[in-house]
Image 1 (cartoon, chains in turn yellow, red):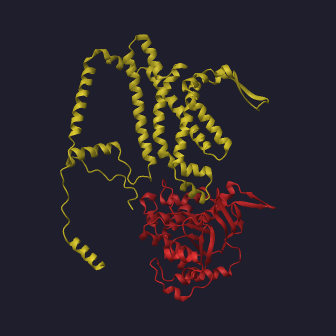
Image 2 (cartoon, chains in turn purple, green):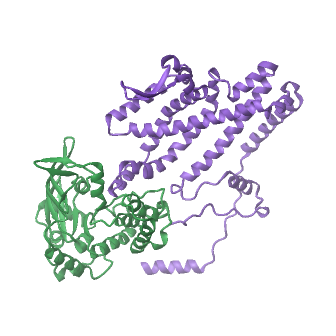
Image 3 (tube, one colour):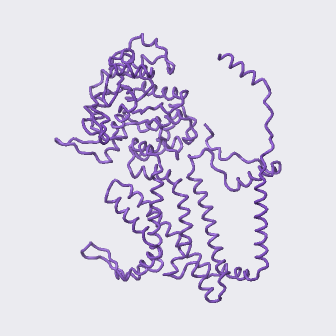
Length: 329
Length: 290
């Protein structure tokens, strides 16, 4: 039996390799129809933008880089960044607390999440803004005993601080659930293996569980960050420094509402695009060890599309092996 | 448990056998074990464990001497994996006493009462007990060598350089010297399991627990893992192996324990138990797996 097999194998090796398949690829007429429809719609839009004077493109140009708008943009970016840092750090802490064995710790995290998810963020913002009405002073000291230092609440909680507190503490409640889902997605065997090596709970969380949970945590966190970028416009009810407020102030003076909203939208879109790209590369970073070859980056995909669909292989350099790190097994 | 194997047993043909000089090695180990001072590496006295109303372990009493290789066999649900997990306190026992190297696992006796150990103490006990899992449980976000050095550096505080040097030695020993920078998903099952063994050995444990280490492997990869375990046994490591590999139990094991329904049904020299089981339950189990 085994001799027969080996004979067969040698015979096959001696024969020439069969011709490489060069089949006609499946045609996709639907794609061309869709492309044609989209092209017509796009042409109509471009034509309108070019000929319709009501867009007042020159106003967009004029205000896109004015210092008022840029200041608003900067404030919005700062608010987003700080609120998200508070949200992510707070979320991780709350998630670990909720999964704790200590019933006091886990139920206080539960109550926090219940409260902050259960009330509108707008109400929370206004609440923080008016906190001085409840607590005129804030002091550090022994509970029910003497205090060492006292501040006036209005100087401590500025409008910026109130905005950050309102947005950040609310975000922490949402992030907590995202992080918790990520932690729960990691296989229990990972925890056991780390325990068996003598690692302790917090070390396991930091070195083993959270890095693996990141794959599940990042996509919704990107979502939350982009959401936050736009939620910051809610602070217009208590403060007057974000992007939306600064364009509102301009169009309240000159009545060019649509062009100025376009200005704000352009900036929101630019920021969102940068965040989206950033998220893509963060995801790639945490994908190490979980996919054999990393997925191609958009430039790689773009090139591959042209090679496959238009067949211009001879004009483009060959696509390099995608991250052939470590080699296959 | 320490009977010197008879030469006739060597005549049994064995497909998994990697080296011919296995029986003498096992014999040497066993002889050494008898001359050692009498502190057993693992001692279980009437150990009970239940999940709710289901009593998984109903009184396990056994002793493992230093340098001894004990194989635990039995049908699934017999409690052998649970018992193994009790030894490094991944599961808490409900009654009885379980000690490793003369020290109670997970508890401390103060006067007439048992006190639960703090997490820090349990972790310290675990650093001396290596464990290998059926499903490998390598950390997928780390390369092979990162998997191995993680605990020595972070738990024992070993300097990075010496930890890496030790890790390279261990990878060499398990035959994977060239795959140090591979991620687990770039390795075959057998390679992953050998990295997992190296990872456990990196803590320089005095006892190794194997929980069905070859059950999740393709048949042709089983041999490599068993060869590494056999080498480890020859180096004098104390091992408890939950396994379905009767060939390994017969050739490498110093003792064999057959469990069923949460109790030890039969134990003794593996060759004798496998060739001539005394209990009806053991006979019917062996007739199905051999």
